[in-house]
Structures are given as structure tokens and as C-alpha cells.
Image (cartoon, rainbow, N blue to C red; front, side, top):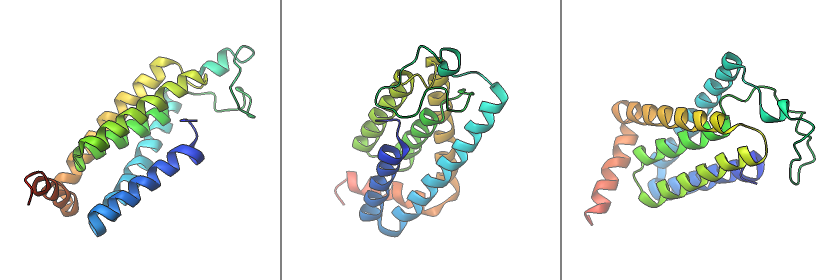
Length: 172
């Protein structure tokens, strides 16, 4: 499913990394490593917010009523706190970061679509309430934009990615 880290999130990150390295060589590798670091920081911030907000997950409140499709893990065997959804936070963070740092419409549209599917899957699976997913998505966009703007200001390889994009659009 779109919620699986092992079968979905990690392969998506691998494909992004392979494309960045193929397209931008060493600068692409640095960008991918930066993306991984930014996602790790966002994930840790999300985890801290879970402790701060301490909002329960749907499965905590409605444990006897939720049936997880195709899951061997019961709905009650997870962390009790669900605000914000780190899945939504991480995917929307990656999408907004790449949208600003790389500026490829097809990549932004693809990542935005995947982010929405991940967000929907979290609600569908009973892992988060819609407001938890919405907050995670919004906070992820804020973090992604912030990190991308900082990277553009301070990291020469990110500036080169933008310059390369400009020359690519003008047929140079």
C-alpha cells in the first residue's frame, strides 16, 4: 500500500535518488543526500509534535471497530499518538522541497499525486484522523519550502541545479 515504508516510501526515495544522480551526477547525489537529511529532520520534528499534542489515533479510540485491510498487524498495536501524520508530513515535505530545488513539473506533479495517495491511505487504514493528515501535509509543505529556500541560499550545488534547469528550458 501507499503507507508501507518498505514497499513504497523507500523504493520511491531510491528511484528519486537514481534519477537525481543520473540527471545531475554529483550534484544530484548531494541533493538526494540533502533530501534524506531533510526528511529525517522533518520526521523527528513530527515525532516531537506527536508527544506535544498527544492526540489519539482513530485506532486507539475505535479499536474494536477498525479492520485493517490486508494487514497482519492489529489496529491497536501501534503508537497511540497520531498528530501529525508523519507519513503525510514526510511526503509533502519531499514534494515541496523537490518542487523548489529541482523545478521539474513532471516530478512535482508525480510527487504531489503520491503525497495525496499516501495521505488518503493513512485515513483509509484508520491510522489517522483527517485533521492529523491535513496538519502533517501542511506542516510538511512549510518545512519543505523552508529547507529548500535555505538550501538555495547557502548550498552551491542546489543553485547549480536551478541554473541547469534554466539552461535546459532555454535549449542550451
